Image (cartoon, rainbow, N blue to C red; front, side, top):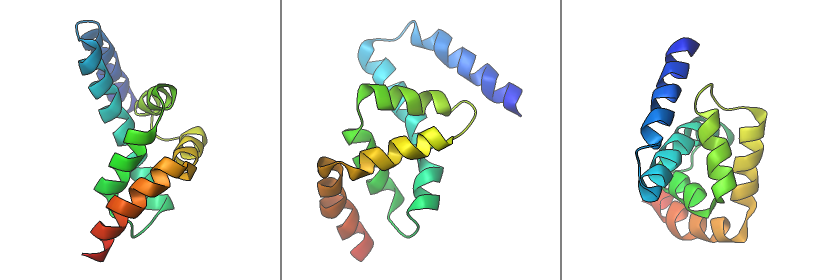
Length: 107
C-alpha cells in the first residue's frame, strides 16, 4: 500500500511541474485537506468536518499547507496534528469556526 501512495505522490510532483501557480496551490490544498480530515475527525469529534476543513485550509500559511500536503503521502504524523492545532488556535480560524462551523453544527 505505501508503494502505491508513493507512486501517486511522484506522479503528482511530475504533474505539478506543468501547472500554473494557482493550480499548484489548489493541488497542495487538496493534498493538505486529505491529511487534515482524519485529524479533525479524531481530535474534534462532532464538529462539522467540511466547514472546519475550509476554516483550517483558508487560515493556514503556505508553509503549513506544504507540510500538510507532504504528509498526505504517508499519512498524518504528530507534526501534522501540531500544525492543525496551531492553525485552529489562531484568532482568524476561531472566528471562522464560530461563524461557519458553529451554525453548521446547530442545523
